[in-house]
Each structure stands twice: as C-alpha cells, then as structure tokens.
Image (cartoon, rainbow, N blue to C red):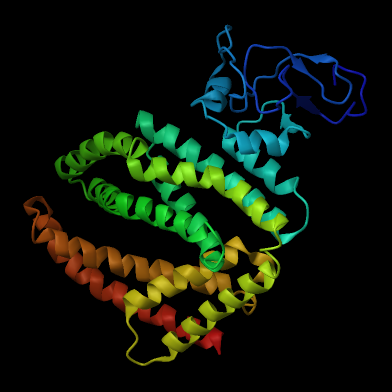
Length: 363
C-alpha cells in the first residue's frame, strides 16, 4: 500500500473521491478512506459517481481501463446512500465489469435481516439493469440483450413471493413488460446464431442487422424507462414499510410462496398428460426462486441440477417448435425445415426423459 494504514500488505487499494462517494471514476484525487492519505489511481475504474459533476479522466486510458470504465453507468442515489459510509475495494488489475464489483460489494456488506438482504439484492439488480441499458444503447455487445433478460428474470423471481406487499406487484408488472418486449428479439438472436452455424449467412445477417437497430430502441423504450424508475424507488419503499411494521413475517411469507410453487410443480409433473409448456414455466419459476432465496429453499439435495437439465431440454424442444412455426412465414428458413422436423422429435424424446428423471427426484 502507498499509505501507512492498517491495510498495508493486503494487495488492495481502498478508493474514494472528494465527494465522499466511493463509486467514482473521475479525475479527482483518490483518497484512502482509512487514513485519508492520497492514493494514486489504479488502472481499474468503477462507475462514475453522479452525486456531483465529475469530468472524465484527461489522461488516455489503457485497454483494460477502457474495458472497465466504459460504458458510464448512472449510479442511483439510493445506491450512493447505501455505500456512502463504506468503501469499495478494487484489486489492482481487476478486469471485471464495474457492475459486478458493485454487485459483490452490495451483497457482501449488508446486514443479516431478510429486509437487508432484499434491499441489497434490489440495489444490485438496479445496477445491472443500468449497465445493460448502457450496453444496449451502443449495440456493440451481443450479450447485452441476454444479460438484460436474465436480470429481469432474476428481479421477477425476487418479487414474485412479495406480491402482497405494496409496490411489488407494480414493479413486477414493469419487469414483465420488459420481458415481453425483448422475447421476440432474443428468439431472433438465438435463431440467427443457429443459422450462422448452419452456414446460412444471408439469413443470419438479415436478423443480425435487425437486432443492431432494435436493441438501441429497447434501451430508450418506455418499458425499460418505467422499470428503472420503479426499481430505483423500491428500496426506499421497502424501508418505509419496514419502519411502519408492515414487513413482519417477511421470511415466512417468502417460504410459504416458495413451498406452494414447489408443491404445484410436484403435482403437475406427476400428471400423465402433463403440458410441456406449463411444466417449463413452473420449472423456471421454482429454479429461479431457489436461486433468489437459496437459504429459504426446501428442495431435495441436487434438485437445482435436475431442474436446470429439464429446463434446458424443454427449452431445446420449445426452440424447434418456434422455428417450425416461423418457417411457414419466412421463406429463407425453408432449408432448415427438414432438419428441424427431425430435431423436434429428438428434442421431445430427450425432454420427456429429463422430466422422468426430475419426477423420480421429486418423490
């Protein structure tokens, strides 16, 4: 360490800026929050702090710095307040995305209560949504759309057991709207990747071109704007309800809802004439809820792996079903029809085998 504080020899630097907000990547001097000694800026930049005007660094950035610093992310005021009395520890040479650094910080520096866990989770998802929006706006990142959808999916899984609490349903509906907006685009992205592998470059290029113009529109869409507005307000709303005593029994409520979903899946999978579409949705909900609240999940051991396998096989079957439906309306997909007709039979067989293994593990 370049300063004489208790962190000597740790190999890490604790950064802050003159506005006392640690989330800062400006040209201001960095200060060790332990001893207040000036610390040279490292090559890693975290998202810019917008709690006050901060200019961009004047010196050219290295390749690793550009990767870490761009794109700029507008950090919500709620997050600035949540970390204003703490510090963000960034290892020298850290090449992780800036939103990942913040997410790990928020999850690792909260108190142990259920409400604290929930607030930290919402703040982390807020940062990820902002990062996805910034990446979609420039349309240079092929994974931005997928990351947006997985973040929205995670948010809906967090919110689903909270529907009886004020504000949760409204936020979940906003997340659902973003999911519905992006589903056709993600389906097109998956199809384009398949066409690339099959050597159908013209058909793939047409869809890639459409995605390049559609993704920036998602970043500016009213659906995503509304979601970002509501999720930014939700932590404050949770704290207000907590102070009013309206969140008592939160843990039991979440456990009850998760157990209900689990029982619903067990019942559905035991039916001989089960509907694969319904099972696919139930499996996704049970699996993602367990990921959102792992300490409250009462699933049998290794159940997550079984659920993931069944979801993957059902997803493959669903993709083939969707592609065959599109092939009737899109002539450039005609060369794929014969292969898809064979593929859907194989996918259906594998999906049923996976469901049988899952049913055996459930009982």
